[in-house]
Length: 138
Image 1 (spheres, one colour):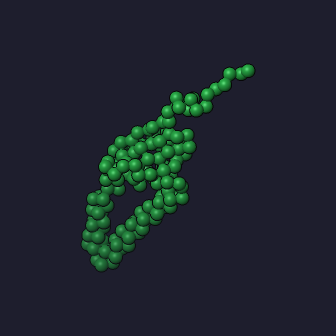
Image 2: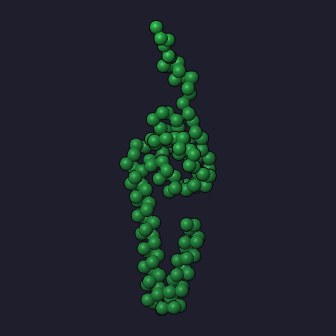
Image 3: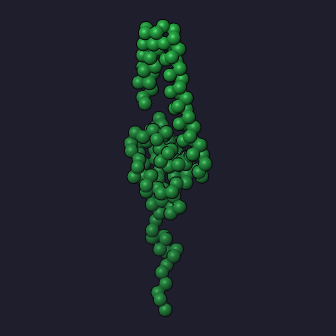
């Protein structure tokens, strides 16, 4: 939820609670706002715990991550998709990378915690064929 919308709803809850039920309404509104903040904090902690259990910068499939990305996604939406924290590649612009077991890498550029752009970098297949040449049957 947008910060401004959440703040406006909290103020409306306090005012409405105070007008309708006096100080008891304000206490009720405060309880609801604190409960909402605790739910959001719990959600953030679950996401960060799951991301911290995986190796940094490692994902199952870079192609699947790249397919699910959207411009404007928040970092809190990106972490459950990748299930790990990204490896920092550059400071300016803020760029993080994830790589899968096959060598494919996703580089994501973030600005103010939102996805601006990304690139899927696949391993060079010509070097793979040179490293593992096929031998003719004898």
